[in-house]
Image 1 (cartoon, rainbow, N blue to C red):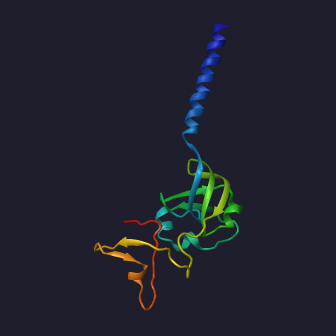
Image 2: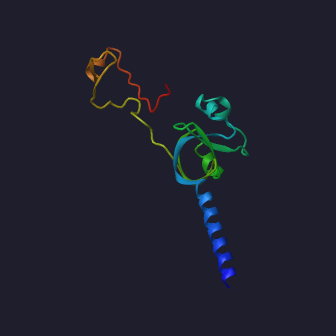
Length: 153
């Protein structure tokens, strides 16, 4: 009886350690990026290579390129991903190695102002230390403001 209990305990501890090792490779959360053709490298996706965004046949595989960490993830929900091909999205799900088991995909809202929308009041220092605002930047031909989500310097 004691020998059987020890074996049971060893099996139980082994199963717990195995589960712990498996959990280290699983991560449930959300990722933001662009739905692209699978098979593109992060460098190609970052450079917006044509092969990452060209429309292919119905049997193509799609992936998520997360531009904040420059990583490409395989997606299991191919039909759902196809609706958002080329769009910026948030993918929620569980990560298993480099594949996301998708629980949901939503299109990202536009970042920044829509064309023609009035900019909010602001006051910032320029590269020379001078204070700038909408009034000081305004010209006869209009004003162009660029908003950067991120920059790769």
